[in-house]
Image (cartoon, rainbow, N blue to C red; front, top):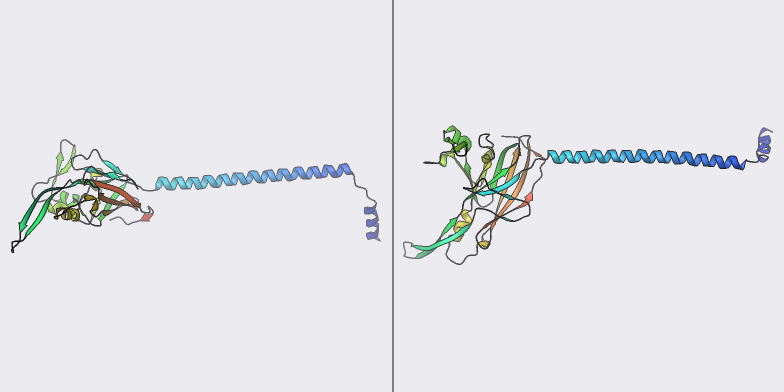
Length: 269
């Protein structure tokens, strides 16, 4: 009976068209406001995420350790050439050349002809902040540098009045205060500053080949690869791979061909 009565009442109910239209309009406005609010919230969240990611990226780049690789002639350390990645540059040192030809005879009287070979020495070094030590590793050449710890212990430091800083006495036998080899490590010394990381490179392999009798194109001499691994005071390290080669005129050409990751953490010596 009650269900039948409800049915009769609903069947007899005639909806107010104006009320329906007003209700629909109010629902549409509410939905629009809600949608607009959701969009605003979404935009705000997206903007916050972008700021967060951007901030992390910028902070990561600011904290990323880095250094510049430079080269200069022995007597001109104030004017150096910066070596950049994937850009070949002619260095201010390292030119290889042939001199006079001469010969020597062995016990059988056979003559062997050789050439005098010249090589202009220079320096490779790094520039950067908060560097603790640098490890150089050459694939084919010989690396040389002063052992500053040994020089200090042996009292071989003296004051350079022109540079207003310390210098090393090079008179007499200096082998005891030198590092030589395919791998050497240079530590930072406050009194020497960036000069603490200076090394010399000597391509004995190329000098020997250039001294041999016969025609020679200097560009055909083998290239050398030097890995420069820089360790920072915060425990991080980064490395660059330096390629050294000669052109047709015997000039030394340098290029950074590889940059290693900068996120390795090393234990300082």
